[in-house]
Image 1 (cartoon, rainbow, N blue to C red):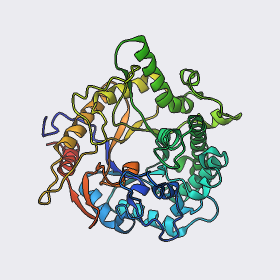
Image 2 (cartoon, rainbow, N blue to C red):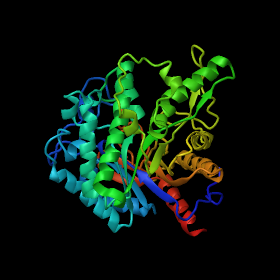
Image 3 (cartoon, helix red, strand yellow):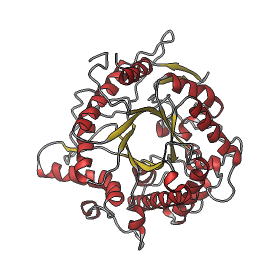
Image 4 (cartoon, rainbow, N blue to C red):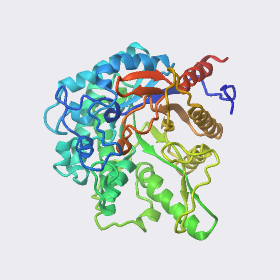
Length: 447
């Protein structure tokens, strides 16, 4: 595998970044007026988190954001994607705003600006205030209304100071893992409910976009959404496998893309879904289907779809990550080209997450993570191939800046460019961080 990036060639205007989310790094779970979120509650239920951990301390970013921003700047990136903890700025998800919470994000944005790093905000990265969950959560139509109010307040306060605001991160996960199989908070296992939740998430996206534009007008930042996506490849060319692959793509990618960019749900998905709890009101689809300024795409692997029992396993020619996900960079090219052809009104795309978990070990202050360097390099090559075929991609954010709380895996999985010693909270740049920094320097200024 090449150790240089001489074969990478991205335009000078291309944005390079790293990404995090609030619950995974902030800690300070009950400080300065923050209210509990559904993940605080979920972590305290027996058997939900692999290592029985919580996000109470996480990476202690709430107290260490100044030095963390210095580390971000040391990577040569010009962009940082982070999420706002809704319950930190509005403890119950309704009612009074928490000024101490808003002050934290204001200070973070100011520190980023001092380092000439663009702030890319995500409003919702899975941490619904428990106060709203107690009133029905995403199963209630009231929650999208509360979300729009929260979005408008963030836009009012920060709209002139940030580069972009995304409504949701990976609503597929909120619906399917939070309500479909109970792997994620709030821990409900009911497929019919997950479908209704997905609609309310999309509705909340539309309401929030509309509310934010009303606040900032044309002077606002770029508004969009972040979706996790994957191509669905049939394991064989049998009609059964082909049909299953088409169904997988329809229920995962098209289920969110079609309402946003076409104004309706994909029929192929509707035909097979449990619609017993599915209810769409007049005007919902029009609200969801309105212009956005960018689409964030999170890509990690493909879906390898087999109708056999047990299903065929993916070949994994390049191996698997520590999450057990097949390393398949060419899937990114195929996904992006497919989106370009399917959605003529597609706005510019940012790769808002891409990265790998590895069983990193620190030895004499060094973390050799060659596999992560190879992973990023190959995915950047795949991204470049898509751009050469006309896909409008404006930036790439590595996931994640640092090792952190990896949801139901706890602290067992390490995605970071920075190694975190959770006992001391010391951060150490991995070999991949040094490589990423040098690669960005080369892309900006040449060898």
